[in-house]
Length: 146
Image (tube, rainbow, N blue to C red):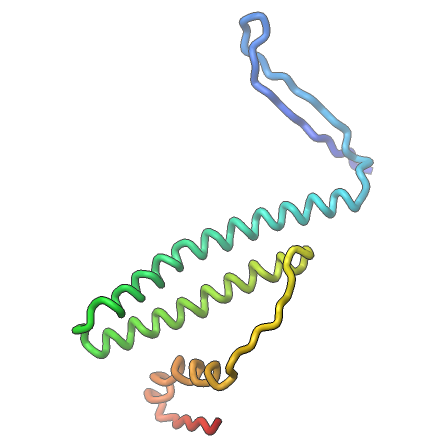
């Protein structure tokens, strides 16, 4: 069996001399449950940090686009359409990052699910708008009867 050691080092002074105080602890026999808990905590820290590092710039992008759309009323229609798509795609990406974050919290029993209502017609219209330009470019018709 492979031996696992926990090493703690503290830089200090002893009789006026710099030294390194080192402690070794044999953690080989720590049970699997404790190792699993440590692994889960580590995963949560990594995922939490990663999703935060994605959400921060996304919030900045979405906020800037929203500001431009709400402030500059005289922007050309084609630019308005592009900014609207950026906003829509940004929200989709933001929601994906949130879903990853929530999945890991759920997986580690740190998230509770709640019921929420939504309008499926709104979701379908949103998806149709997302691909509207591509459909037009490819001469594909789209008809929604909801």
